[in-house]
Length: 394
Image (cartoon, rainbow, N blue to C red; front, side, top):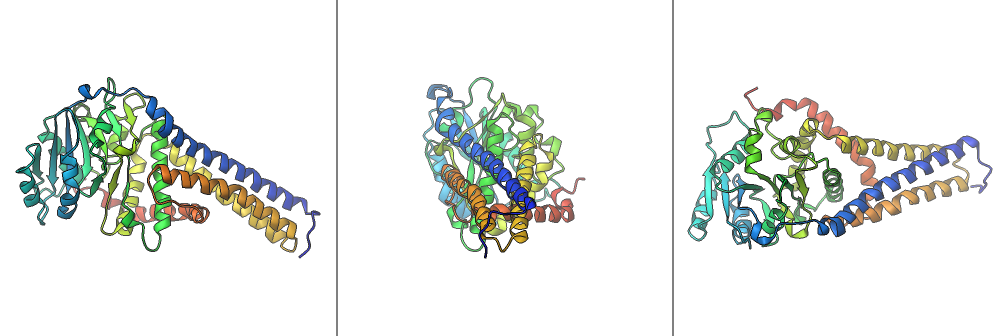
């Protein structure tokens, strides 16, 4: 190889373009990371919260579908919450055929604030999840509804306190955070799933921080019952199987009436026996429902930045191919790659730490590159399975 700075002007242009795109990507990526850090470490702590004596009464609605083993593990923590106001826990059993009903019945002997509601098995022309939540709300006695699922692990006895402290005057919706359990991050694709969950979570969290909430997670979502009824429940999306946490949140949440809660005590972990399979199902559902939310700027911004990431790589590849015998060009190309990769890896490491995800570092550049390709695959698949997202009442 020949080391020379006598490089063709087209190659210089390609290298310059790649450098500019790299700097744009780094600035954008790190600004997002710093916004999350700033919110969690400073802004959230300086907000006004309700005094413990003023906390609202709350009904926790737990969706269960053949989840006996999860309920046995995680329901007692919900029942033993240290909460100064009245609260109840309503397990909505979606026609389970395991021991869910018997387990909850046994627990009701020890907890007088626990009850169970059963979804009729014959009701198959509606969204099972939405019907379950509606039945749970109808059976509730308190002012605020907090939804979660049987496979969700509550880590703190102050989970209710952390979520409910936000319901001051004018606040109708509180968005809580949830992440997958560590047992799911094993085998092929584990690091990709971590990166995808981190990226997806950053999108809706940062949008909420900006005052544009468009989704939450049914694992950890609270809203006033009065708002649910005022919105006529899920009536606007009743023909869709999904959307009880994103489409619904998009309907009722605004920058003024919504708060994001990111205190670690409020975090929830969702567990799955087969996370790779569940991950694919959840991705397909989110891809479908994302077309029906009101704020889409986060999706567009992510798409444009992914395009810039690919254009930057294409410019570097073209420059190296045109001057592959020149060591100077190769070294400059490597330096430009490092300009992007090092800050991006450090920012991702910080994001994963804040969001309680397995820490990523060296695999970040590769999976950031292939993520748009994988997402495109899900979109194409969605075109052929679109009808599966609707109930039979259409």
